[in-house]
Structures are given as C-alpha cells and as structure tokens.
Image (cartoon, rainbow, N blue to C red; front, side):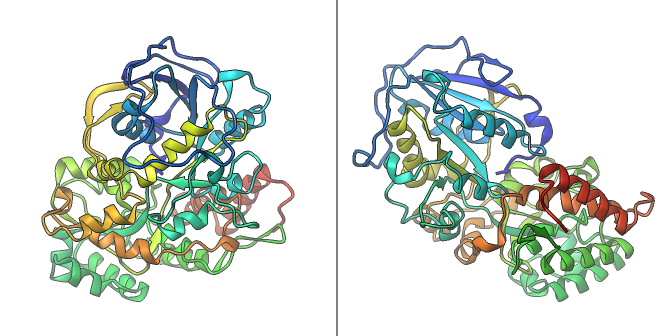
Length: 482
C-alpha cells in the first residue's frame, strides 16, 4: 500500500531488528547489515486465534531471523503492534527496507531474491512485500512460493480480487495473501458539497456524481461557485485505469488504453477550464487543498489514503468529509505478503500470513487502527501513537463492522466507511490479462509525464510528453515497442 507513498517517510534504506516482544532495536543502512539488538522474549506462542496443520512441504525452519523485505514501515508498525508478542523466543524479526520510488525497491529486492537460495543462514529473505503495481511480476516468478507450501490453506475470508491478483497466470497457484483490501472511493469535502450540490448527505452526493458525465458536469458548477472539483488532474487516474478493458502492453508493444485516453481527455478539459490543478499527487500544492481553507471538493483514494495521507485534513477540518463510491468502483494499491524461495523459516512465514488474513483478533485490531507506535524514517519504533486503521482483507470482520450501527469514522463525521467500502470491495475485478509486470511504470511515470503537457507554462507539448515517456519506458525495458 501505499500504500508507499510519502517520500519523506521512506527516504533511506534501513534494517530494523526486533527480538521477542522487545520494541527496541538499532537500524543501519544497506541491505546486509544487522542490528545490535538480539534479545528475545520468553513468549513461545506462534499463532493467533487460528491454527494450521503442519505445512505439506515444511522446508527449512532452522532460521533464527525472520527477514522481511519492505518499501516502508507501515506493515512493520502493524506487525509490531498486533503480532510481535507472538514471535517465538529466540527469533529476531528484521525489516529490510528500500524506498519504493521508481524501481528502487524492485531492483534491490530482485538482487536479494536472486541470491537467496545460496545465501548463508540468516542472510536469507524469508518473506517479502509487493504491491498491486508489481504483484504480477513476483507472483509469476520463481522467487515466490505456493502459499500452501508454508501452511496457508484457508482463504475463504479474503476478497476475490485480492486472491486473483496473487494467483499465477497459469496453473492457478496462489502465491501471496494480503492483510488489506483497498477499495477506492471519492472523499468529499462536505461543506463544499453543501454549497455546490445543495447537500452534504452521502447518499444524495453519490446520486449527483454516480457517472463520469455527471461528475464532469458538477465540475463546472464547482468552478462557478469558486471551487475546484479535484486538487490535481492526476486525482482521477486510478478510477479510470482500474476499469480498463485492455492492457497497455500487447505482444510487447505499448499503446494507451481506452481508459487512459478517457482520463487524459478529462484531465485536459479540467485543466483548461480551471476545474483542477496540475500538481503531482503528493505535492504541497495538493496538500494545501486539504486545509481548512482548501477549495477542492473531491479527493480520490481508498481508506489508507484518508487515514494515512490526509493528516493535514485530519488536523484542520476533521468531520467535514464523507466517502462515496463516485462514478466507478476501483481499487488503489494493496500490500501482499509472499514467501521467498529459499527461506529457512517456512512455518513462521505461514503463521504470519495466516494471522494477517484469518486471525479475527489481529484483523479487528487492524480495522480499528489503534495501539500502533509510529516508526521513524530510519526504521525505529518511537513512542508516538499512530492512528492508522485499514480496510481488512477479512470479510467476516468487515461484515461485523459494516452491520454495527454504533461504528463510525470520526474523520468522516461518524460515517460508517466500512459499510460503504465493503460494497465496492465485493465488486472489484482483477483481470489478469489487463495487468503487466510494468504496471508501476504505466500507472506512475506515464500520467506524470503527460501531466507536463497540461501545464500552461511547461513548454512541453503532448508529442514531447509522449517522447519523454518513451525514453522512460526504454530505460525500463528497451525491447518494448510503441
């Protein structure tokens, strides 16, 4: 997830060691350094509320370090809060982190996974995380294991699209599981909606923007009232892209999808008419639109977005927001757990996977997002409390809270976002043929390249923007034609 997002949070590669239930540990840069913290706890429990049979192919369980590769510390924070005390005595947990920008994380992960089987003892990567934009690459590689081989046999509570994303293109082998679902919504500033639409009721707002034609028409009304429809021309990209009916890549030839063309046409119209801005997704200019005096009515994102990436809005205008499905059901991001080939901790990896999919206590804590300590940028847990609820990839826990009339998200003025999001999650589709191993490039570098052509003072024409993207694409894989 995201997940994965704010560069300031993941500015350096670091390794964090946690032993037993000790929350301390030193971190060092690089990928092979280890912490000086090797203390262990006496807690020898190895599972949460569910237990599994002995794995069909147990493999090597001699490792004294559980090494998990990641791009930021969000999952580490969840792990530390909800599972660390279940790690057996004598086992040290080590987080091997590389920032996600560009292909940095993938390049470093590839290097480590290639060396994994020949790596000595506790230098092995045992489990690694992957997100939606490159899950296909690792699921279909020899670097990941069938989850059944590490003891994960019950996925009945997982959302189907989450399973489809982690299933091989051939052979129908499940290679990964996820602790979260990422159904996307439109996050609406209620006070602005009241002015522009005449209502701040989520159901009525949805009825007025439940198609792209309606959404685009409301953008004109927002401008007339002195507001922006969105804070960035990039804001709606994922909602279009996740509903593409074709792939960016066919027979190793790149071509924009119909969904991309629809997004670009909207983006150009919005910029030309002053309905949005031309800033990047994580720019300060966009963050300013979340402030109390911000002018943007609609932000797009899943629960991690408004819980994790809208801290400015949480501080300055909490309660002045609601979530609705908007013009299209979509998802954005996600974090999958994959067992690394060559791991010497197969049983423990399976137990972690089971806990973060099937353990009712763990998944409920994940939904509530409390009891978390924030990690620093160098990978150390701090004393700072962090409220970071996630939409759990567990349909039973989701149903429990969706049906709970007393549950509500304070940031959303008490709205039950779980109830709203659950309907979207049920309807998300993952069409394997439409995804590629280069999705991160297509979903990040491509729209950002084209954004330059929309800026009135950039001097970049549409043709030049395409050529700039083609240069980027050639750097990723020079064999791709266009």
